[in-house]
Structure formats: C-alpha cells, structure tokens
Amino acid sequence: MISTVSVKVGKKTHKLKVSTRAQVRLEEEQGKPIGEILDQLISGAGGVKLVSAAWAACLNDGAGVEVEEAMDVLDQLGGANAAAIYLADAMRKAFPVLDAAAGAAETEGDTPKDPVGNVESPAG
Image (cartoon, rainbow, N blue to C red; front, side, top):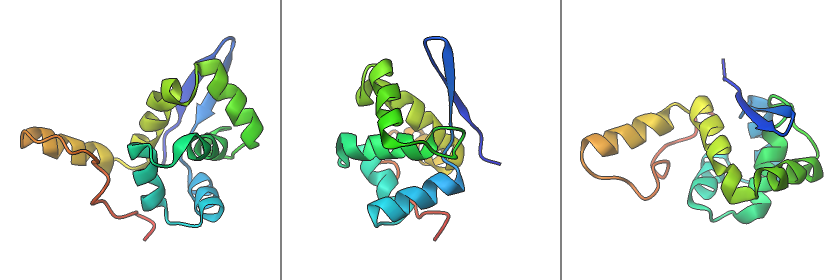
C-alpha cells in the first residue's frame, strides 16, 4: 500500500499520494516513464510545469485534480520550491528505494547529486 502525505493549507488538509493512477497520469501527460519523471522532479530539470503536473496527479489522495487547483495549492504553500518537501516525502513513500539509495550513499560518505539516477522504475 502506498501511504499518503497530509498537507495542511490554512484550515484545509490535502492528501498527496504518488498512487499508480498518479504515476500513469504523469507518464501519459509527459510522454516518458516514471523513472525519468522522478529524475526530472528531483533535479529540478522539469521546472514548475512538471511540479504542477505532479501535484495535480497526486492530490486528492492520488486520484488527481485539475492543474489549476494544484497551482492554487502550490501558491498557498509559497510556491513550488516551498512545497517540494511534501512532494519529496510522497515520492519516498511510493518509492522506498529513494531512501535506500540516499542512505547507502551517506553510509559510504558520498552524497549523490541525484539519488534516483540509477534507480529503475518499479513499473518497468
């Protein structure tokens, strides 16, 4: 089971989950596998447009919302950079290997620039 991350914005709590539905939506919208999308999200290479698309796909407990609603939530959180911690947490819950990769690098005393770079998508 993929866990949810709760994000409180004012009096409302949003549920963010990188569900299978969210992953498929992102793959269809972006035209690339989830592993590449994760790489771009982690490195920042996908820009705010990709961050907005990821939030739209993952909000509503992984069922998704319209991009405009996701952008409103991002704005209320202070923008894409301020909201990054929540999306990163949701990604780690869906892909525990992200924590394992980061932990292994820290154990070796070498922090990778991109801990997902060598990780294959569990979806194939």
